[in-house]
Structure formats: C-alpha cells, structure tokens
Length: 331
Image 1 (spheres, one colour):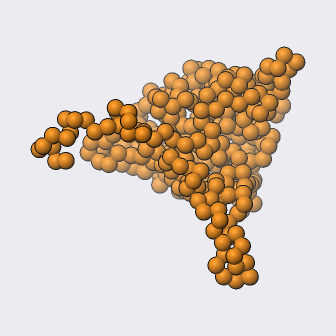
Image 2 (cartoon, helix red, strand yellow; image 1 turned 45 degrees about the horizontal axis):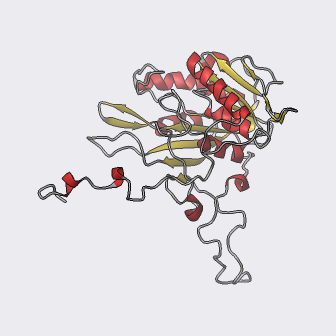
Image 3 (cartoon, helix red, strand yellow; image 1 turned 135 degrees about the horizontal axis):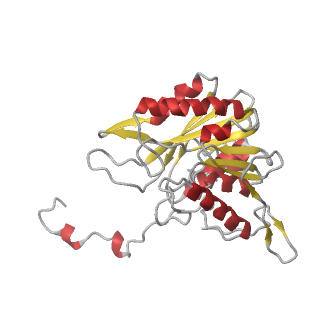
C-alpha cells in the first residue's frame, strides 16, 4: 500500500502545505484537467473532439449479469459495443493506442472468450494489434465444473504504425542483471539493459516480481486496499502501465466505461488529462471521492512492483486442517 505526498503526485501545494485540488469537471472543455461525465457512453463520446485522445483504455461490461448491466444475447451485446467502438475510432489520435481489457462471457457453463470476438471489430476498422497481454491473478471465484478462471486479456491496438511507446518507463528489474555476452566483440560485457528488462506480454501475479522480472498485478478483491462498491473493479496499477508506456505528459486519456475511476487516478498520478464516462451516479461519486483522496495524499493503492503477501505457514488458515490428515481422505 502506498500514500504519496501531493507534491509527488504532481498537485500544487498551498502555503498551508495542503494539496491545491485540481478541479474535476462534469462537462468537457479543452482547458479541463479531469472530467467525469455521468452519461450514456455513446451519447457522451459523440460530444468529444475528434483525434483528441492519446490513449483509450477500459474494461467494458462483460455481459454476465453484473449489477451495472443487463445480460443480453451475445450478438446483441457485440452489436451495441460496435456502435461505441465506431465512435472511439473517431476520438483516438493518429499516434494513439487503445487498450481493451476483457474476460469471458459464460452461457450455460460454456466459455466464450470475449477478446476473440472483439478483435475483428477493431481489426476491420484498421487498428493494429501490438500485444495480446495476459493478466494473471491467483484469487477469484472457484468453479466446480471447469477449472477456475485466473486470467483476463488486455488487447493493445494502435491506430497507425507511428505510435507512442515508452518502454523505459515500465521496465522491470532483470532476473540476472550480471549476465554477460558469451561471444563476439562484446564478450564479457553486460548483455542486459541497465534500466531493466521488457516486462513482456504476460503480466503475472507472483510474489517476487523484483527478483524475477515478471509483472505483478493482483485483481481487486474484498481485502485489496483499493476495493470500493464496484463488483468488477480493476487495479490502478494495471492502467498505470498503459498510461506510462503509451502516452506523454499532459496528453488526454479516455475511459468510456470508467466505473469508480481507476483510469482517472492512473492518468492524474502521472500528469495526464483524463475523461471518464459512466452512467451510474454512485460510481461517478466514488470516482470523485477517490480523486479527492488522491489530491489529499490519503488514497490507498498498490505501488507498481509491490510483492504479494505469501503465508509463512504459521497462520492457521495456511495450515492443512487436521480433518484432512485422517486416513481415507486420499492424502
């Protein structure tokens, strides 16, 4: 868990040492810093300027009957999403990126991987898929008639071949920084990058990120420091990597299904401008509250690279129950 000072977060600091809060607007202006639009996504997008956003990043409703959505037939869901995607193409800047994070649609116990359905919707509009990123986590609901799902997919598209990619801003420490070239003119010299290694397209939930160099992002469950009222909230850390790698400071970021504002927080933390759209008034209110907490330096969130707690074996919940140690239980 981390709590940064207002100055570290890029907020102004007044004479009393308190953060000078950046206004969160409820209508869009090019002079705005942060905007939360409580509205229908398509209607709100139609009011925004063409080619403005350097990054569009979101996790759309999965059509699985959560409290904020009404489950419909899969094709009807995709048709609705396609009308929004068409408008997003207008909003995305020529050098911009779109990151679309999805899981699975489930019907009568059958899995429909949503990224495979969304890919052609973006591809036929000319977007180029740069990575299909697997975001792996170790906690979630347990299935009984199939293996428990422990990953979701982030599709990273660009609008053109001339796009922003700041790899150095998201490198992770190498597992073997002392590794050297074994032949050629650089024989014996360090073979890695002093800034760290490329985190790859597999973002895994493990304990020793800084030892292994694999990106470590937990999902947001009930005991997570970022948890709010939203049932499918994604972590700030997931969006931060996209913001840092795919945008420059003071550029615009859009989340068309903003939920409780994780994208807005990630953007504001790193000096970007942001627009979030959500039709739910409670989620919009929570977003504003979280941004206020960010400005005051009291927002709880995981820093990039924070190790995941691993039980020591001394905790009761990590020990094998005595009932399982009796004969006849297959152990």
